[in-house]
Picture 1 (cartoon, rainbow, N blue to C red):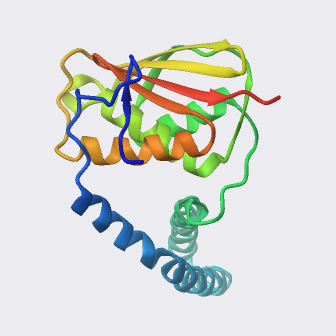
Picture 2: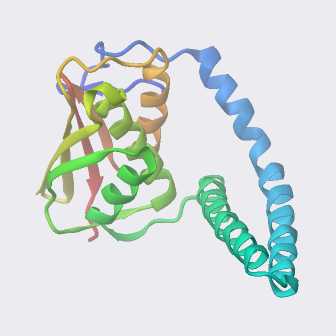
Length: 210
């Protein structure tokens, strides 16, 4: 369950084995999410109504500008919250353009991508797969000193889209690389996909829409 694979299909030895203690710590945090999301949603709604009312009552240009800036920041915060909240819901697959999946994952992880993907649609639960792909792009890109750019090469093989993510050579990895890759692999396998690790590259497989 917690293993991810190398390119031969054997358990990956390039990354440290996931730590049971770290995974349980993440699970402990995740167990708090449903009630946390409920509480925060209520507060965000109240805050948005208050800021909207303040913008209507503002009498000076400076006050209206401040209210507008506050509303913009609040909407951005609400969007971030909504994406996180979606991870806690039961996964529901829907056809999604593959380019959208990787574009949104790249944006989430602040990674630039080069290369092209085959034009196709994959059948996935979008929130969890965006999160999984974002984790992989982040690891492949490495720290800022490495430029944060990865190469994507994607082609369809039968009923699967196979995307190779290649990062800079000898990219240093964080200590929890094995933990986050185990979670990314879990999300991909749950959606009928797969993760394979190679030298400075990761292969992501996603099911095509029938």
